Length: 406
Ligand code: EZ4
Ligand code: CO
Image (cartoon, rainbow, N blue to C red; front, side, top):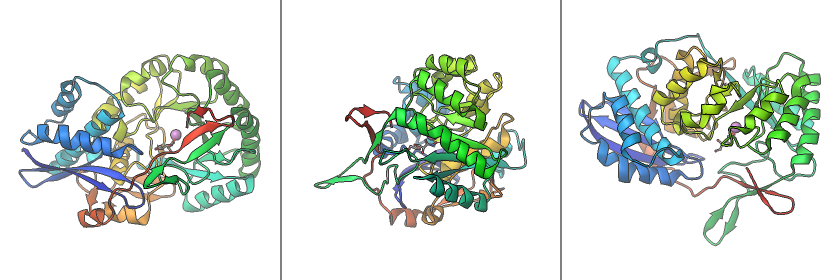
């Protein structure tokens, strides 16, 4: 079965998504997500200009061989652009293979290891009362685990709270250009404020509700150690991205000082980013997305490696992962033994129309559905009616104007 067509579809039903659609000589199509938030068109070019010409005429059944040839054959290894492009090919080929088998993808990954996939949702509020309202709204939607993000006194815009992300309500406009929104940051103010937020949430919602928090790469190891320790009384499910973890060695110091569980990896793109973290069991959850880690094939290998160290999965699932990437994640979640939790905020109605999907959400849990393949269909006409919009993720500056990690 040969690949005879490969299209890269860019659509923006509220935010940008990049999708690869492969077609075989038997007329079977497969979809893969290649969305890299804020740098989308680089992956479009990588696929269109450099990968598609290599795929045409190759055997659609040879998933591992195709993966290895794209990874090794480029000579220039790793990096988010390369690995997002390879991920799209990998997932599209798994989609095709599962459709040929007439089975939902999770069956080809070993079958279900559980009945449903536990998720967490995102609560946020500039103030504590706003945060409580947001938690209550999520509980009403059925969520059973909740990420807590709040404003910090003295700061105007903080990650996860005010409209932010590549489609922030307040990007700067200059001439025809859209420039990134600039948020502000003060680590001292944040470290002083956050424990009181979790104390308030525990007092309001009790001891049982699993609570998570994302520090979004902003702390040094010693600051992260202090935060982890100060949150111990509130029994977090995890503290996420406490430091910019490309400095893997820094996590040794964090780990020595706190029993708050740690989750890292949404910006990582190969197993090599995890060697110290997993090998020395410095974290508790690996957070990579199917879309940014080269696809289902390498992520499965990462989870097997993590399992040797009692580390669980927690696939990255923000709104900038398309329903195609989300579907692939849910099949993996259902199949692997060391599943931890799945991040899930859902998508807009329009996005769900562009990408009609078999996966369903109820009672805070996802199920991939029983459609053959990954279970997502792309409405090409609707996608075309919502063309690419220039957009950037925000940047971050300290109060004296110094650039800080966002
Ligand atoms: O900021 O995916 O845990 N989730 C996150 C995300 C990331 C975005 C960046 O594009 O940290 O919200
Ligand atoms: Co995160």
